[in-house]
View 1 (cartoon, rainbow, N blue to C red):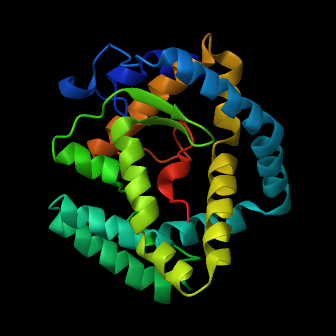
View 2: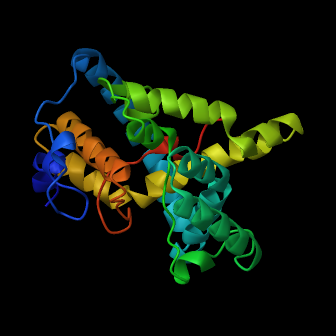
Length: 249
């Protein structure tokens, strides 16, 4: 199943329907492939020797309900960035939903531990500057593999850097001498994401003829789904970890 998914990744959206023609090109747009492959295999060594064992211990120590609570809190903390991107995209309804979700989950949901908003018809939607730039018509540029962070593009990398610098939650924590909160957030994000994709990554790694090409294709499909707002549920659809969903401090 994973091998088939990898070969068809650039032609379909996460729900299996045909990809928008503008996003379904057959060219990998990877002029830096030699460099990217070197960074990719470095990242893979880090993943196999550090991240995977840590994620495995995390899954052993925390039951699914607690891991879900951690994910919910991380999503809730990202609400200011979600709101900002919704506004920049001109999605006024989505901006209103982002505010409602934050208020409901921060109060009734006990600081975001429980996603009460999703249970009431307002599911979480990941929004990023990469998506906003795409809505503005900015081309994604060449495919990139970033050290430690993994699959990206020029547009995605620039957006991630700006979000990492401008995230209100990160700025408040840094300006109040609470850098520990930022480092804790980043650490939990990495472990949470790697834990979520534990079986999917093992399956892709085992069954792909070219692991690098499969991950590149899956990254493209994931990003295209985000841009088209056809977002995939990572607990239902095997995709790749996106550590940039929460910025560095």
